[in-house]
Length: 130
Image 1 (cartoon, rainbow, N blue to C red):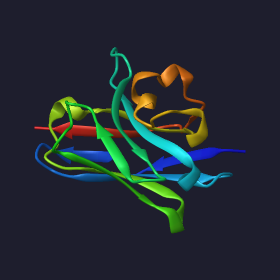
Image 2: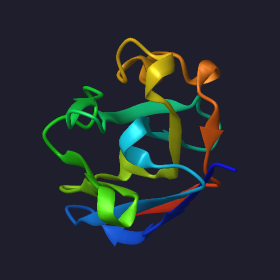
Image 3: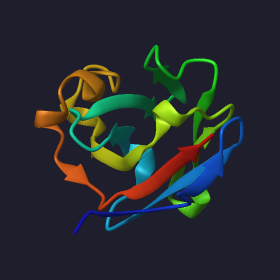
Image 4: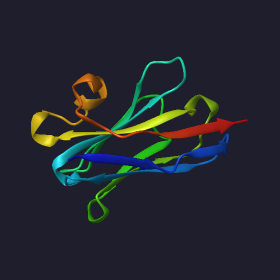
C-alpha cells in the first residue's frame, strides 16, 4: 500500500536551513502529485508546496515563496523540501501528501483541497527559535 515517511525535521535557529525528505513506498512518485503541508499547534493546516512529478512543475504558498524549494528524486522515490531563511513562524509539524496524478487536473489542486488528498505521512516537526 502507499506509504509516506517524512524525515529531516529538527530545531534550528532563525535564518537557518533544513531539508525535509518524504520517502514513498508502495507506489512510484513519478505517477503521483506530491505536496507538503504544515500545521502549527492551534492553527489550521496550511499548504506549503506541491510538485507535478511528471513535469517538475512546482507551486508554492505565498508565505514560503522564495525561501522554499520542492524537488524530486525518482531514483530514490523521494520528494524533498529545502527550506532556507527559516523564521519562527515556520515552526510546525510538516506533512507529506500524495495522490495519483490521473485524478487531478493540476497537482497544485492538492494545495487547495487537502480534504480530497488520499495519502499522508505521519509528519516531521520543525522548530525555529530566535
